[in-house]
Length: 312
Image 1 (spheres, rainbow, N blue to C red):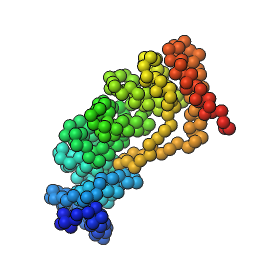
Image 2 (tube, rainbow, N blue to C red):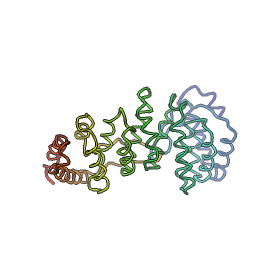
Image 3 (cartoon, rainbow, N blue to C red):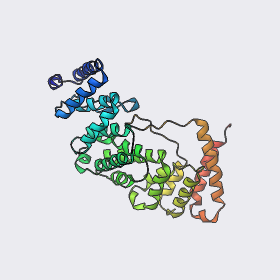
Image 4 (cartoon, rainbow, N blue to C red):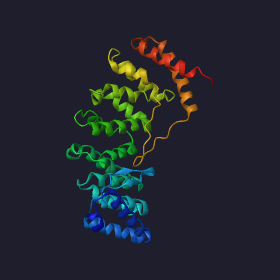
């Protein structure tokens, strides 16, 4: 801690943290865990001049404070003790970057119904805490990935509220990406929520179109939800044109996240999906109930015919 307090540069702080990691590795896991718990319980801390950064596997490649570094290391060597420490930290709204690592540690430690409920409520507390939104740190924004890990539609209202913050682009973008990954990982409850409560995306209808463009029509339930979306959305607005330009959307943003991963799909799988989507779209075009969205369906048909006309 003293060395970090004296440090005036990122490189010097990183050297100190490397030395600390070496010293901790020289101990048994039990000794290292006990030492870390004692330091964290003491409340002492120091800045590192290093930016909070998530690396491969959810492990931090950059820790902005000594405590964040130790929380990350603790989660690697003693997941159970780290989850207990996380519970203590998550009971106080003090440091969003510590919350990010603590939420990850708690999620990794396994789940009972009580733990799952506690984790969800703590994520909801993070997403609704105004002071953290106003001065959003990197750790705060990275913590949105825990909502993706939890899955389901229960946190969609909180995420979409943040997505509509026109005066806070960093938070709005983080919420947009988290909702997109939620749709990819758990499409049915998320798309159902977006379909049933149109006000959740008021002012961001084009973004909603992007989410529905993720639907996989080979899944009967996703197909039913998508049909409902097409039939209830006003075809005169730009939303359905945006949908037609994207569907089926196989573009992915690859990044290191605290808990979740979105591996790219093989080209053959994408081609199969395109062919199935084309078959379904051409079936819709023959049905009277889809007359209102026929121009959009024709746009999709034209693009998919080009995609699927090559060698198979």
